[in-house]
Image (cartoon, rainbow, N blue to C red; front, top):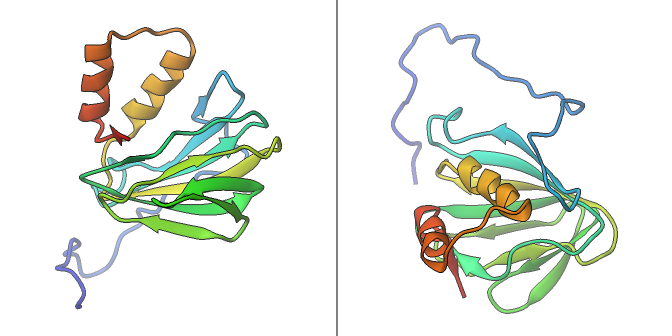
Amino acid sequence: MSYPDPIYFGDEGEQSATLRRNDEDHTLTYRSGGTVDYLATGASTGGLFGLYRWNFAEGVSGPDPHFHKTISESFYILSGSVKIYDGNAWVDTRAGDFVHVPAGGVHGFRNESGEKASMLLHFSPGAPREPYFETLKKLGEGLTMTDEERDAFYLAHDNYWL
């Protein structure tokens, strides 16, 4: 394996770093009390990846087993305990644990501990996941969809439920 083709062609480098402070307001706050922080979106990385901090509230929450056809997904547990479905079983993970799921890999994640938990959620390539997370928030606040609309929503966002 070798390095990919260049994506920057300057000779001097540039000042283009971004910073998101830990104490900034959360990007999304769900009805459950859980929050999401957009750290790097597909748009801000030129489609290379997306990185989000997922902060679980104390209650049980998280998606059931599913897979994606176009993106890989990785989880790095920052704090607390998160159950990750690895395609075979629900596995307890703790701070410092890492799980990578290639495209097509069955996975799910949830907090069942009764305590807060936090993890980094990484997608590659950087698909536009933000509208997906934002619509989930609206669904939790009472937005309704027909079965056909819900199926189209999941298909548009590369979610295939088992």
